[in-house]
Amino acid sequence: MSSFQQSYLAKWEQIPEFSSWLSRYKDDEYAAFCKACSAKLQSRLASIKQHANSEKHKSNFKKYKGQSKVDKFFRKVPLKDEVKKAELRFCSFFAEHNIPFRAMDHLRPEFEKDMIVDILRTASPSGKPVYSIVIDESTDVATVKVLAIVIKYFSETECTVKTKFLDLVDLSGETADHLFNALSSKLSELGLDIKDVLGFAADTTNVMFGQHSGIVAKIKEVNPKCFFIKCVCHSAALSVSHACKILPRNLEQMIKEVYGYFSQSSKRQREFAEFQNFTDTENHRLLRHYDIRWLSLHACVSRIIEQWRALQLFFQDQYLSDRILSSEMIYNFFTSDINKLYFYFLDYILPIVNKFNIIFQGDYPCIEKLYDDASSMYLSILGCFMKTNYIKSTDNVFTLDPKSTINYLPLNDMYLGIRVGQ
Image 1 (cartoon, rainbow, N blue to C red):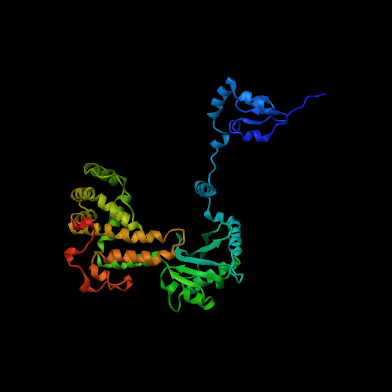
Image 2: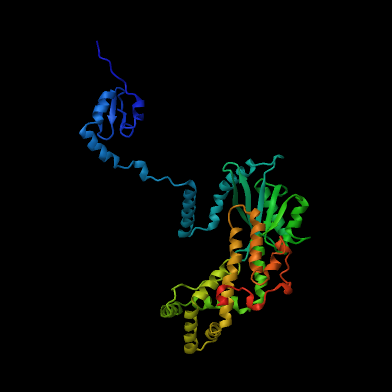
């Protein structure tokens, strides 16, 4: 008569003192296996306990515990990070091998197809897709007018609001008719209809928001229920630009002149580095200001202030040694304390607007913050030159009149930044 053989029981692996090293022996349901000792064991609980208490197992188990599992060496990277890496490698490949960017248009149909399917999947009760459009007109390096189109929609597959670049369309003209026809044609090409657009955003130019002949007026004719909003960042930038007209015109121009003086000359950059070291100034380069990049002005102002003393001595040397008009003009600018005060003021006031701008340049919905953030920015500015009791006289800050001179603070009490006050 054959003796009874105990089958291996998987529940033994749930016992705490066995769980990390015990398993069934491969190809034998009547045997156990010790991972720490690489040993085959009898499939009996008493034998397993006896092995666990042996000196050999205890010694091997200490070494086994100190080993990391192989999967720990292969860290799982989030899909979003993998997508970013793929995009960077893709763009780097095109740049490194000097491949025309137009070649990427051959890949775009597949990307567009997935996006359109995602858009059409999210529909209103009437069965129509729900999405918004953001557009901007620009001119490329070949002086060709183009229309950039961005689409914003809710993705049911990812349960989030997504903002995607739709296309860059060549324009045959600059009027609202040309923009409207280009936008309508592109949407129709993708199986969408401008009549279904839920929201529309653009900058505040007449060709966009002109009351009678702008593209907004034309969209209203076919889609009266569409919600229209002007670009918050563009509106804020225009306000700052208008306010800055009262300042001397040479402030912004001087930022460009200083950058231009160094940008094409490595010799001047090396000489300036010597003055930076002499004045114990950080060895930073001067920054370029772009008119279309609203946030760049403050960075340029801050850098000029940081380098003020080094720039002053450098251009003094340039003026005395070379006697050229450009260096004389810049040197005279840096010898003026009034100009320095203007830069100190800009260094204080511009971050208030930039903070507001950055919020609305994010890639997430934040329209609900517009009133509170605009109110906060407005109050910060009014508080610099208007009486506190007047500012607190109403709950609606936008009813306050910034031109009410009777409510201005005395000149000595106005706040223009801590460094101006000093």
